[in-house]
Length: 437
Ligand code: GDP
Ligand code: IMO
Ligand code: MG
Image 1 (cartoon, rainbow, N blue to C red):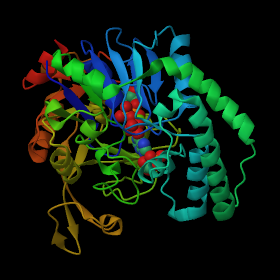
Image 2: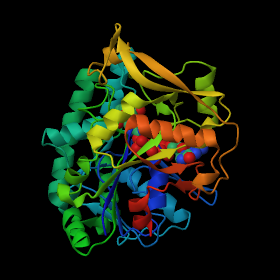
Image 3: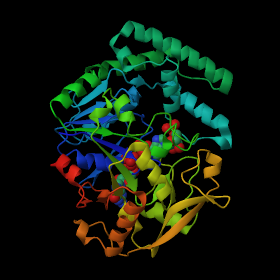
Image 4: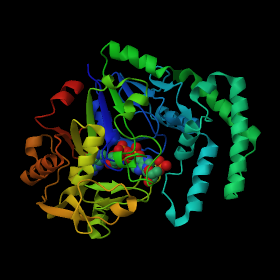
């Protein structure tokens, strides 16, 4: 059975969690391949909301094994809280159902402290990170000085590595940011040793497990976090995250080769949002933007910050199709657009009178592009109860058709409410239907 990669095609929060949850009804494995608890993925099943930050969005599917891949930076304390929260709501989280790759990196409290100190030092130039320590944890990986989950399996060297990292980071925090860690090293070590004890049974060899799974033809979903334009190479640098958010990262983020990826699905909102700083050509700082935020409940799952809202941007999506090799799109939150008389779609950019063939690489240029809009007809009907594609209002179907055509990628699935079951599939959803089947 083929494997499926699911990534965000905009700036994150596209509804990846919902789509992953839906498409894992028969999956054997769900693998998070990058990022950390900067992510917030929301699942709604029969009115019950589950928010996940580190645990893959297959956890509500009893048959699925969930792997936190080597590409992830893992905060052990946040993971334990998340496990406890799920167990409290009756979800089974056993070492068989939740595996942490031994090669994943550890994100520790000093990374959070560094992230926050740095952001506050940047003042109005700040990135607007989630403050979860993700950047500093990836820096340690690149600098070859970070701790890994594998270090949990050797208590003696773990203590040594942890105490020396902590001491070094305390120096950096004090000398560069005049920030002092108030918790003493013994207390910090005791907390980590306790967390380690609880997580030990979950540690596994992810790439070996996946090799077996793929040989047995099991169904594997690779779950992305963040979104294409938060990628640190191809995104809106420097207002990006620190791990590759593109579909290709599914291979390096869990130790499988590129041939293991059969189908790449991009998740995209029917409009655009972003949280934190950075360029956003179609942003609406007006009543329409406020309306999108209110109707779409656009507040961050992780930090609660209001999300910036704007129109759909074809330039963004065309680039996402290219960077990820998207085979199809899942369009979410179409219901939020009900009631707009006209819906604007950005179809191109001009900069100083010149038509651009792609998004500029410099953020300050992207800030200055003039979006070229077309206006499409809106609809008034409430979409949230619609059960079949054919029952969508004609104007909604035209909107879907027009953006698929302009973007150059089929839209195979549409989501019309947060609830799991609110999904519609088009006639071209062959692969996806087979995958769920
Ligand atoms: P993710 O980070 O990509 O998983 O997305 P988030 O969970 O951070 O944000 C998406 C939000 O939209 C969540 O609150 C979802 O419950 C909600 N959502 C997902 N799909 C739909 C939809 O089709 N309609 C509406 N109204 N809400 C949706
Ligand atoms: P999910 O998986 C939306 C944004 C932050 C900030 C930038 C860098 O829920 O889609 P970081 O903490 O990663 O150093 O912040 O990236 N960001 C997200 N925005 N959704 C996310 O994840 C995000 N994860 C990080 O707001 O602009
Ligand atoms: Mg999110």
